[in-house]
Image (tube, rainbow, N blue to C red; front, side, top):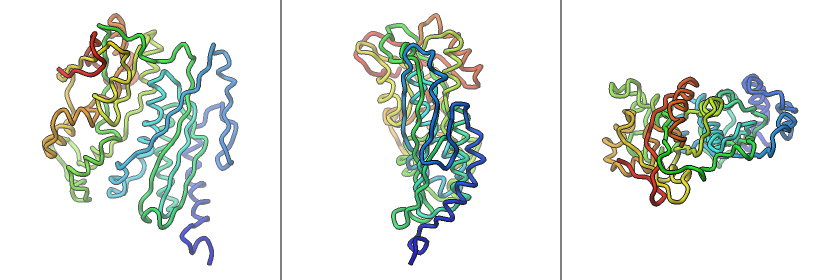
Length: 341
């Protein structure tokens, strides 16, 4: 008896590391001091010594049950982007610059090519965020996960000068709320998605005119990474007073997290066109409007609050970074919360 007979293939682990190296190398930053394969990742902070009060910000998250689609479609090169996005978008919400990322993959059977595909997506997400992929772990766990399934999670660290932290405390009545478009469902609410739509290869590969794509391709579209868009706003000289990453809990849970006491967010539903996938979800699943806005991003992946005088400049900066933005509503005096109108 040996470890391989017990279900853990050490040689496959070595091959996975070799296959992923080319993807990881493309994410490197000059501050990285270690090579892939060490026991830890080292990152120099000397580049940030001129900050008045350098402050670390962190985020950790996973992809959730969206992975079930990857299993069915046998498509594994985009879920890594989702994993990175869920972490670095939270860092960007605080005004931070993502510095480095670590991933954790747990699987029933280590298939090196599949693991390399996953890491390829993680590396692409890191490139989009400007973060270095400085380490990770692939754990083969036979008997715990099915042989053809895996879980994926990650952890990111960023930095911001304390004076530039986005806290929401200075948001006031009549400030403008700007929405930045999502790429679709992103990585939240998939337990409900999987109840509404049949999770079969045939169903996911069905083309719908209203979507302009196959259902599976629409659902598995990776989460937008907003790091560059928010940096563009800052570089344009606009102060972001408040910021919310619209994840699980939709508008009703996430937008209040950026509001100070005494401020309510008044959101105009007709400020933008809701993507067809959300209309399809609501119709096919007979899901009430309030529940849709309490579960999904509804086409808005990020919301920022700015002074009215800066609204046009902020929108222009976001569009210059390649993202779509629009006035979503405004802050009003009232009990903290969200009013859809």
